[in-house]
Image 1: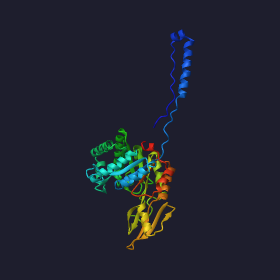
Image 2 (image 1 turned 90 degrees about the horizontal axis):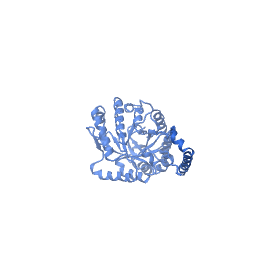
Image 3 (image 1 turned 30 degrees about the horizontal axis):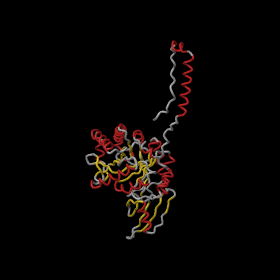
Image 4 (image 1 turned 90 degrees about the vertical axis):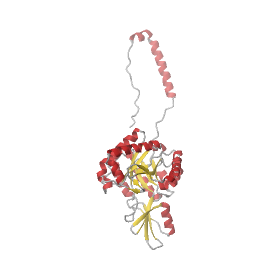
Length: 383
């Protein structure tokens, strides 16, 4: 923490009898005149104000398959966003870093990143345990339980961040096991220390939970208290309360989101907590669901003339329709109203900010609601 500047130190005066004795009152007169002039000069210098209180952090998570639209949306709304996390790095079978997009997309991706840099938006890309396009446990587990592989992995990440001039890295290692808890803490601690030594930041994505144990092994594997000590941002993935293979229901019911925040603020410093907010939904039919953007949900409701309802208890919109094959569907999604409820929950909890999982085309009304609830400060993005 910055220490408050102390006042001028008072040094004891050392008497030098001979000099003072010879000059007498003339010296004191000159001292008084000089002091008065100095006071006038000091008062005339404009007082420098301290840094303005930082505003909320607003991060846009941009998956590589939506990088073009996501970049354009962020640049259009750059006064509402002060950090971006392109979701584009993964792990190979050998636990080494990989790029999730294909080589033929490299030039296009570089162009989008350049647009973000020109807009002066800090870039903190996400690194996930995605191998060959799928979530994979073994590569990250091998790294976590092998000290040499972990050391190499930390070095590789720091070199990537420095080489590409990123502001930091976001670690999104999912579906770990309870037995990985201690080594995962060791990994993020070593990575945080190395990044901070290079003037870079560490963000860690964690599964949402309302107790330390949570509801399964992947929750146990993430120690909120320990991670909160070393990460600059702890991103709560407060979504997928209902998911692709669950029964239909809201993606992020606001009551559950508040419960997640209530627990998180007992374990992690509030100024390090960033609430993940989904801007997508699911379309269930036959026991499974496909993910949908707000735009896709809107088109489905329009095409099938479905009446959209709004569940006040969970603050979530939904509708039902029957497709051309006669199969019933139930869609739960997010719009500007449901997102606003979560923006207000974040603001009310006093946490650092939010990150938006921008799966695709979101409700355009989300952006004014975001600006009203959480006016972003660019300086916060570089804190």
